[in-house]
Image (tube, rainbow, N blue to C red; front, top):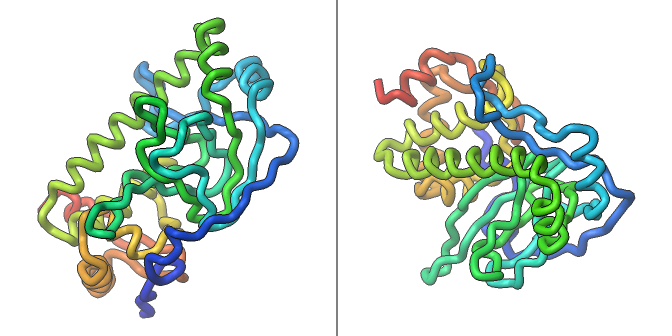
Length: 255
């Protein structure tokens, strides 16, 4: 069985690439989140009504980013929030040591643009080609103040992101590399599918290491270990098939 040496582009140099974006006709906004009330599943669903989509589209500009393009830089003036429609983005912060720490991986239906005191708190970069709606913060604030019904999907999204941050903190607190990798693969797959047969992993292993708080060598070693145990199988450079779901859950649970 092959064990690919990276999920995508090898190395860390990709975090320094910048590519200009382009704009097209405004596409329909998409906010995916778990509603506050009890539902049949705990997976995200589209929350915007047709009327809400039209109101948000009036202030949005649809932009396209090439792979490795930066949406914004840490410390820049925060003028926009980006609603992802397609593709995947990573947010990260550079450390004084020269290394970087991945804060989050974000996909279609997510909002990107966390700011504090008027500046972005991290850098956002496209892992794959990305399509997003760019929402001016001042226009969005005025719209939300004048249309309270729009607050609900944004509050649901905020709750989702707080929960994701909590789970990420729990993941970083684990000591076992196999458990971290298993939890990462399980959570990526089950976000939109209760029992996924495979998981799409477009980021590099260096990015996964920076997200999990592991070394690159530990990530590669754990992936080989899970493959030898018959838990996962690499179908190509970007996709991992989960062969033994019960065993993966047992590793996540620390059994």
